[in-house]
Image (cartoon, rainbow, N blue to C red; front, side):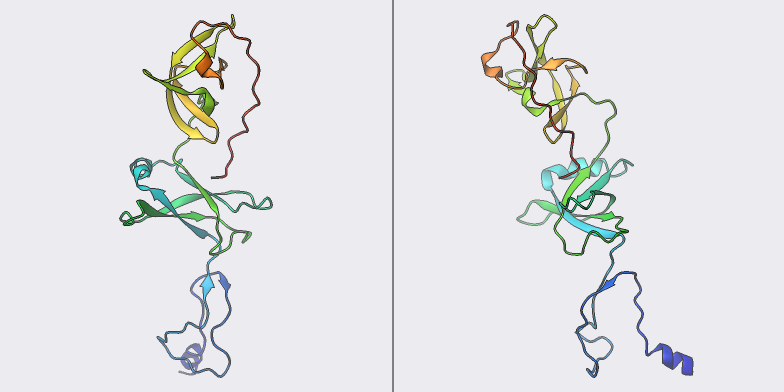
Length: 215
C-alpha cells in the first residue's frame, strides 16, 4: 500500500522528449484533469513535419502511397544541418475548405535533435526514383502547335526539331521520356529565332546545378 501511495506521488512521461517551461510552481494547487498542464513535453526523435499538398496534386500522391520510394525530405535551411530523409506518415481525410489543400504529415529521424518543434522547414515529397532518366534544362522544352518540343543540334551543327514527352521536373531540370537520348545536345535559349535545318554555332551553356534536396 505504501508503494502504491508513493507511485501516486510521481508523474512519469509516457514518451521520450524535451520538457518545456513548467506552468506551475512549488506550492500551487493542482488536481487531476485540470485545465492547466504542468508542462509540455515534445518528442524530438523522430519528429513530425506538417505540410500541405495542393488538391490537384493529391491523386498523384495517392497513386504512389504504396511505392517504397515514397519519401519526405525535410530541410531546416541551415548549412550546418543536412536535409533529412523520412517517411510519409499521414494524409488528412479531406480537403481544407477555401484553401484547396490537404494536410499531410511526415515522420523524420532526428537523433541529433537538430530539428526543433514548431520550426519552419522546407519539405519536398519524393514520389519515385527514375533510373537512368534523360534530363534536359527546363528552358530547352518549348510548346508548339504539335505539343512540347526541343531543338537538337546534330553532328553537322544543323537543327532537328524533336517532339518530346516531358515528365517530372526537378529544380531546373526536366525528365524527357521520349524524343531525346542521353548525350545529345539541345538548345536552351533563342528558340524563337531558329528553324529546323538551320545551321548554328552552338555555345556551351552554363551547367545546371545538380538537383538539390531543398524544396
